[in-house]
Image (cartoon, one colour):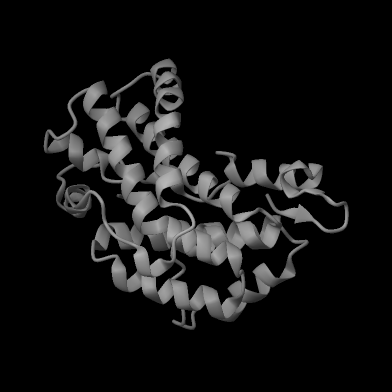
Length: 239
């Protein structure tokens, strides 16, 4: 656990840090995550997900893909929240995301998160400086995972909390999408989230603190299904 040098208390116990931490995870933060189903909408239409049991399996596979492919970028950006490192991670992830739908979703959410963070966490002027320096330049694509780690690092979250938070946000957004797609009710969604939490923690423990060179896909079928989202005749979500 990282220490706050001024107070000599664990950073996770710093009251002001906790306010920022909770706000970063709050669903009211307008980062656009609820506009995406992570391929769930396409999975329903191709009959890969037909009910609650399939939904739980789907969410676990999404979490495995998130952990194996994206957590290394969150981890690396949190450890070194600087512009040069962010640019390097963004370029690497842009090359690794071969699914066009997923890549556009990552850019959309990352751009929104950077815009919101630069406005909300104004005590960190480097966020605004970095965003303004890169807007319209074509230097970076603004992918979500590196920006999430960058923001976490700049607001003082330790790397473990940052990675767990990224897993939580992913699980929350997929379950929210399932609710709006009528796969599960609001109460059932809350029960499902609580039930999956221990599995998510086990997946996190397996994949956390890895270098980006170890990034990989664990459930490539889901990546393929998400890529079909743009061909759906009717759709509620962007991805």
